[in-house]
Image (spheres, rainbow, N blue to C red):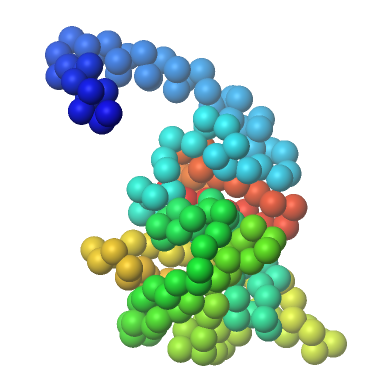
Length: 198
């Protein structure tokens, strides 16, 4: 079936490529205002429309605000569609382990587990320096506050090895990551957290 479908195509000419680029650029110029309007509302779900121009399976970077991360700050909940970034099924499957190079430079094996709330949960250990020092601030009453960090996960040249780091939500780098995701249509938002990939 693939061969039959592929044989219907042809190698594009330079003229066709130029015409396609002109049409693409024209459409892109008409989209920003619509995207900004949509992005302003709460509860934006990526992949619920055709806005996303980058599949999570081909993205180089995946990110999410830590927020009120669970298990005393040791589990990051990733949206179901972000599982595709790791080659995981967004509707769930058995837990899997991946290797993450953390800020100390060491490689740590961490488990990804699918939850009933349609989230992939990255289970962190104290081998992750930021977990050991605390991703959520301790409030005066002894409880944990909202985390001021976003988790940034990036690909390496190995299939099952990623880098994991945490950046401040007020940092210039975080603003750039959000901006790039918005431009690609890969910015999402729950009632409590922003997330995306680029």
